[in-house]
Length: 225
Image (cartoon, rainbow, N blue to C red; front, side, top):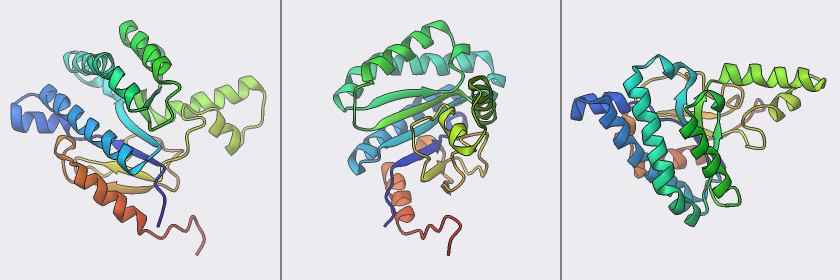
């Protein structure tokens, strides 16, 4: 039985769900937040240590400004209203990505949320925000050159946004789309990938548990026999 330490998720399909059910992409984003809470609770139950959620990519700036503004407001409200609950559940929050390019109010909330939850030792939820894996790799190489140390696998790992976070065993992508979309490309060299047809707001706790169970039965060779 394979242990599950880190699950990464590309939460695809919010906009499509919103158009289908409410004639509004933003309604889908709001509904998708409920699924986030369900998956977080499942991780607590089965004692997953790390959960990384692809929240906003470097490519998502191409979306309409109103939708971007709504997404950031949704995150701000979540961090404001849920911080005490996260602390109570011993959840640590960490953000990965180019955070300096985010709105000032959101950046302040990010720093506050990370500070308030920094001592929590239960589940660590990593929110990939303004994140792109190619940019992350460039950032890592530049850091290595600046430090005048060897460019090798160990030092690249140490200078990624995910420093001190183990690589994910599982990637889940909802929305019936079969691609990685510039997400954790370095970290997912040996990750087991599960593509789910359901749109993210339709993804249930039982779907998450089913994927975990399927993963536990996989024979993982890592290049060996």
